[in-house]
Length: 258
Image 1 (tube, rainbow, N blue to C red):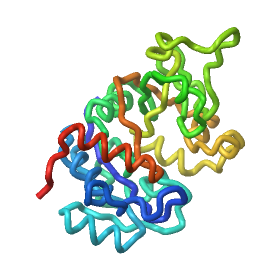
Image 2: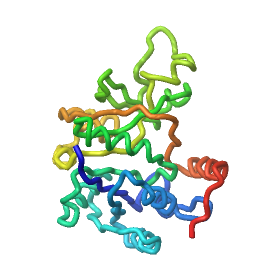
Image 3: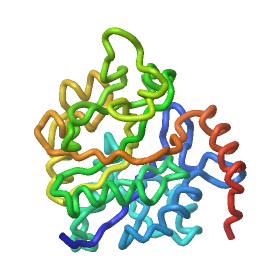
Image 4: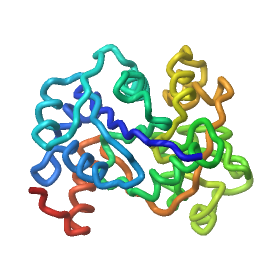
């Protein structure tokens, strides 16, 4: 199935763990600038916009040449913000929607393309990605979201707990380098109908327990496909993440943006 893909970057100024996250400086430039420069170069997207409820964020983004859509300040999640924009008349001719996290300055296009392919050609309602956990610390860390999937690629469960649990012993380093021990990468592609169905659902019991909104559509029966991809850099959620990301960007000889 062919179809046009709209990329939407939700950028919320309020953040409990990293104040003013979209504008937080990385090597002297706001986080949202790093993300946007990455997103706008991706050929998998036919068009991309930034969705925000902050005039300050909007001003910074427009100075970068990024199209900005102002949204309600009442949204409980980035998914709701993405859905508001996707439903506007100017974007209704896009068949598929990609939710590109605004805190992923090293997002890789093949990962996003894998999620898009799951909904565009794979027949899934929602597509997302995962990568091997690699380290036991990550397996036990509740801030690292784990996912278990079926052989078909269907998501079975997302959790902050160490799933799947190896009863007799902890996984070996070699086991953590492959399935079934997977870290979820929080980017999504949706069919238009699936996105509408997701945001129409009330928060679910498991979602509220784990504080993971992807459990809401999973509980409701939406088919979520999970593509296993290669190594992925984590996003930026805390001041410690900022330091790690700056070090990583320096390692990669971060470009200077005009």
